[in-house]
Image 1 (cartoon, rainbow, N blue to C red):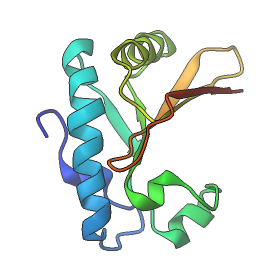
Image 2 (cartoon, one colour; image 1 turned 90 degrees about the horizontal axis):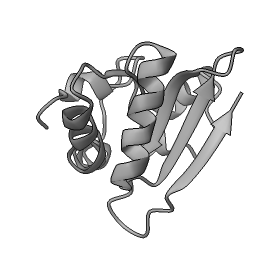
Image 3 (cartoon, rainbow, N blue to C red; image 1 turned 45 degrees about the horizontal axis):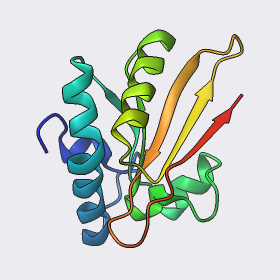
Length: 130
């Protein structure tokens, strides 16, 4: 983990992250986030990483959220333009399970959800949500 620290991915409720989720976060960072951040050349902020069930329900996360396994992070590079460039880098690198681009009302990317599975196939699925 070159560009990120584990505490950026801790649950916002303050609970302890399970070891299995911690291992998944390390894989997500090493396989997806660190290479993208290196190529992007600027800061990338983790808005949400691991979520326990309680916190996931509080934020309206889906019942099978990859956040609860430590397989996903919501990230931003700052502005919609920077997020667009970061999303392009993630897509070009091709190492992700799912990428969801969450848009502002004006169509710019507000933040990016990106996931990676250590075990099993990664779908390379891209979704855009307004």
